[in-house]
Image 1 (cartoon, rainbow, N blue to C red):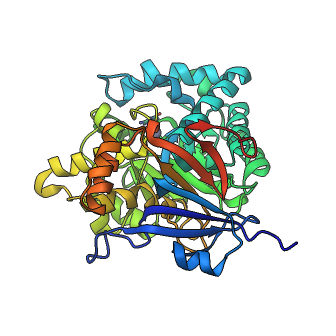
Image 2 (tube, rainbow, N blue to C red; image 1 turned 180 degrees about the vertical axis):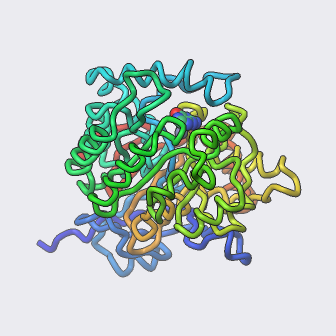
Image 3 (cartoon, protein in one colour; image 1 turned 135 degrees about the vertical axis):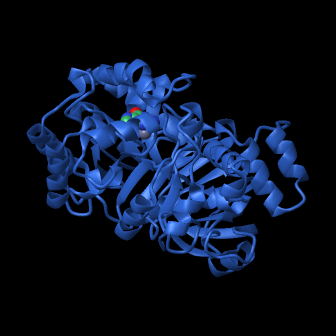
Length: 448
Ligand code: GUN
Ligand code: ZN
C-alpha cells in the first residue's frame, strides 16, 4: 500500500508570515477561515497549504483532522524563561537585586539535588506545554546535573528548547559559583551531549556581568569558539542599580553591552534579556552584531524595572521578541506578555509604539523564531515550516468563548485572544507534527 502522505489539518487560523513592523499595509497578520495544512508523517513539515477544498482535492487519501471547533495558531515562542524559578512565580513588591537575594537564588540553590531538579524540570516543561509554548530559550541552572534533567525532560516531550549551564564566579551565594576552568569544561561537556540532538540546542549562559568576571566571560567566549552554531544568552540593562554596579565593575568597558561584546559573545544567535535602559551606543552595537533583545513585559512591571523602549530598539534595527521571564515574570503565558506589551506601549504615550493584534502575534511567534535563528523552521504556518501549533478551544460559556463567537472581524478575534486567552484555553499542542497536548492534557511524545 502507498504510504500515507500525512494528516490534513482543517482549521481557522492566524499567523504572521510578514513582519507587521516593517510592512505598513494590510492588517499585520494572515487569517484563513477554512485552511488546509498537509503535514508530512516523515518529518512534521507542512508540505501543502491552501484553502481546505483545494488541498483536499489534491490529496484525496489524506486523513482529515477537523479543528474547526477552535482557532489554530503557530506554537508560541518564549525567548527568556528561567527553568529553576517555576516555584517562585508571584512574589510582589521587590526590585531586581532584592528579589534575586530573597526569592530566586535561595530556590536555585535547591537544584543542587538531582532529584529536586528532576521534579522542577517536570513542572517547568509541563508549564511550557500547557501555555502553548513550543519553542523556548531557557535560562538553565548553575548545576550541570540540573541542566541534564531539563534537556532530558524537554526531549521526552519533543519541545524545541535551547538552554545551557548558567555560570557565575562572584557576588552570588557560594554554592552557585564556579571557576572559569570548570565553567568551560562543564559547558562543553553538556553541549557535546545535547547541542543538535533532535530539537535541542545549547546556549552559553553567563548569568549577567554583575556576577561574571572577565575571566569567566572569556571562558564563555572559548566555549562559543569550540561549539559550532551555539547560541548565547544573558541579561543586560534591566535595573538602574544593576547598571550602575556593572559600570563600576568594568571601568575599561564602554558600556554594559560591551562587557559581553568585548569577549565576542554577541552575534545573530545571541539574545540579551530586558535592555530596559540602553544607551544609543549599546543599541548600535547590538544592531551591528545582529543580536536580539528578549522583552519581558510582566517581569519589567512586577520588578518595577522600567518602561521598555520598543521604538528605540526598532529604530536602531535591533530585533525584539517576547520572554515570560518566569519567575520574575508572572507566568508562562505568552498571551499575557503580549497583552502587557500592548498596555505598556499604550501607556507610554508619544514615546510608546501603538501595537495592534498582528504586532502581538508577531512578537509572540515569528519574531521569537527569528531571534533564535529558527525563522526557516518555525514561527508561522507556511509551507516548508515545521508543524508547531496550538489549538485554542475555550471552554463553553467563558468570556473568550463568548467573545470569539460574537467577534465582528478577524482583527477583533485576535484582540480578544490576547486579552482573554490563558492556559485553560490551550487545548491541543503540536511540535514537528507530534501532538503533545490533547484537550488540555499534556503527555510525552507518542503517549497520547
Ligand atoms: N538578572 C540576573 N539574574 C536574573 C534573574 O534570575 N531574573 C531577572 N529578571 N534578572 C536577572
Ligand atoms: Zn531573566
